[in-house]
Amino acid sequence: MTANDCPTGVPVAEWRTWLTERLARHLEVDAARIEPDVLLADYGLDSVRAVALVADIEQRSQQEFGADLVWEHPTVAALAEFLGRGASTPDR
View 1 (cartoon, rainbow, N blue to C red):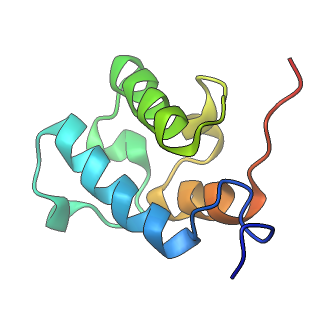
View 2 (view 1 turned 60 degrees about the horizontal axis):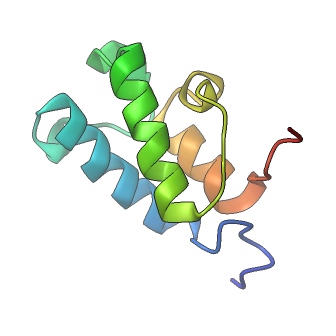
């Protein structure tokens, strides 16, 4: 897979691992408890933690995303897929 296949330059599998670890850190739970297809809201992700997670994603990807990124892609799997394959910087 090349950087052209991944607009963020990071493959889906790497995003999935990173997101799982980062989400676990924000929620103060063991990463082994995070399932890729469970809604982030079901883990108790609130708006404050969601904004912090998006900030982490922006820092890692060097791209800007709206604060609603995690609500538009509400699971680790969906978010990783978007970031690894379908990400684009929104028009601002």
